[in-house]
Image (tube, rainbow, N blue to C red; front, side, top):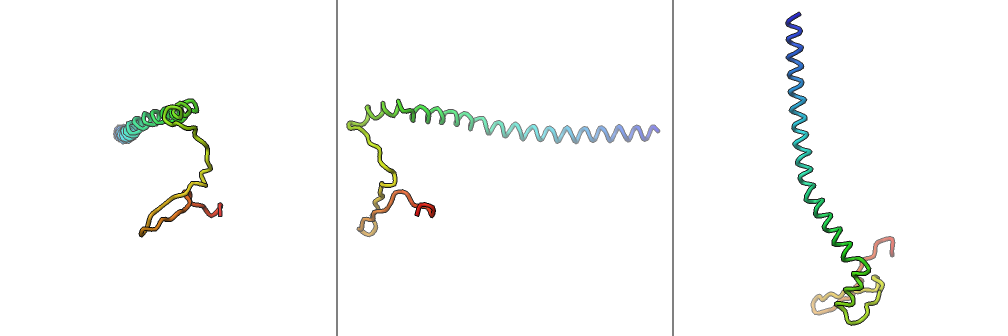
Length: 103
């Protein structure tokens, strides 16, 4: 009876060590992932702030008045053309490439 109790306690101690070791490895991995995410969260916050600040209608209007003498006008992006020079020849092509759905 003493041997069975001793073996059972030994098995429980070994099982506890294995579980504790596995848990420690998982906690280390979680810590490393969290440490890698932290600067990305900070950068995301900065980029979102910059995007919201620079793309607000009030800011765009202010930049228009500050940096452009004439009023800006809207144009259709599909009307923009691309110029490229090859072998002293100028090639005019669409700025946006058409997909199969648009053809």
